[in-house]
Amino acid sequence: MEDLDSLIESEDGHFIVDSNSGRALLIVYPPGKKGKAVRLTDVLARLDLFGVHGFKEAILEAIVEDADGMPHDVGLFPEPEAVDAKIEIEVSGDGMEATAIVEPPLHSGGWISEALLSRALADARVVHGVRQEWREQLLTPLVDAKTLVRYPIARGLPGIQSTEDTIKYEVDPHPRTVPREGRERVDFRKLNVIPSCEADRLLASVIPGVPGKPGVTVRGEIIPLFPLHEIRFVPGKNTRVENDGLKVYSTRAGQVRVHESSDLLSTHVRVDIEDVLRLASVDFASGHIDFPGTVIIAGTISDGFEVKAAGDVIVEKSVGNVHIHAGGDILLSEGILGRGDASLIAGGQIISRFVQSATLYAGSSITIADAVLHSKLVSGLDISIEAGKGELIGGEAICAGVFRANRIGSRLETPTRIVLGLDPETLAKLRALDQEILVKTRTLERITGHLRMMDEAKARKKPADPETEKKLILVKEKHTVLLASLEKQRRKLQDHIEPNPHSSLSTLEAHPGTEVYFGVGILPFRVVGRASHGLRLTLDGRKIHAGKIS
Image (cartoon, rainbow, N blue to C red):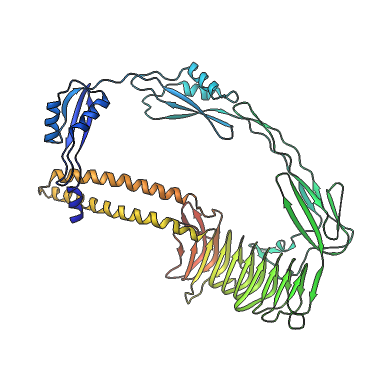
């Protein structure tokens, strides 16, 4: 209450100049005990601004001195002259749409005429796509319009885009994405399939695209088509290119690897036939492995050893505290018992039966068959843990797209964190603004509470100070406007840090201790109390929507 009383006492006086039937009305409000009173010079300046005349300065001085908050007739308030409507044509940045912006007439002024519209179109150089029905709508006077009115007036003719070149592969370059069963599950019996070919075989062909047609803007400008994006094969390792880059053949047997590089006008596809290194195991006999092709290990990798490959790494037995780095995919037929220090880094996808106490980074997706325990998974696309037990217990899983698992967490409420399509560091940008909003909100709540108590006192027929109530209402209005402005700033900031709207989570069972984050400014989803079954989480605007798996 002391802060509130101080706020009221410090309020400055203010005044209003209004008009009624050609007469000027002056209302002067008194200040608080510590506020500043209205000055006569300010009143005179306002009357001069409005063109008020016929007043007596001595009478004004008395009204300012009394400051009784009542309207006083002080002179003549001249009626403004009639102003006709104005029009401006706005053309979109791409030139495909033109919008007429009409400033309504004032004080019985005239509406837009056919001649005025034609002149505005000419000034904006709009010569194409003007629609007659839009023109008639604009020329129909709008009664009681007070603010700017926008009308569509013209639309350009969009072009027909070219059909781009495509590639027809005779040998599937990505066979591990094919063996799927049921709800997008990998068939782990087919993990060791690698894309291979025989010598002198056609690997792929380019199917040429079809050119499109240019468009026209509302200013009659021709929209040129982008040159047809061309795809051509370039010579690679153990391959030959024929028919002006439209066909590529192998020159020896081996693993097929495809590499693409693009610029604005073309995509160059290089197909290499890689050597395949086959090892019984990796240990002190072999040392660390660094191979320019694909590495297939029939046994295991001993603790502390590293395997690096420009292609894929395929291991047919379980591994422990090891480090595997592949330019392509990493496939573990069994799994990894990392003991907290193991790491797998793949430019493509990672597929394993189980993961325990390890860190996995995949440029593409991560697919685990049985279980993930106390590990960190980071995927540039999706994470799937759905075959066998399909459990994620403890640790953290981060992916830009879709997360799927049979179970998340455990009955012991093991902390398990899942992050979908966001950058948590941007959260700090909102803290300062949120703090300011909190302070203003608390002040507004105190004022609103005091006004409520005054209303309750009046309802009990207890006397209330009308001046105090009037000042409280004014202060409340000021803080309401300020708070709305701060909230608008906050929304604008959030608009630049939107999470991926296509991210989602699906699980058959999620236990307490599970936390799911979608983006900045969005409250996380936490499983508390008891397990959730058949849970599907998606984004619904700025909220996480919890639904059921269909």
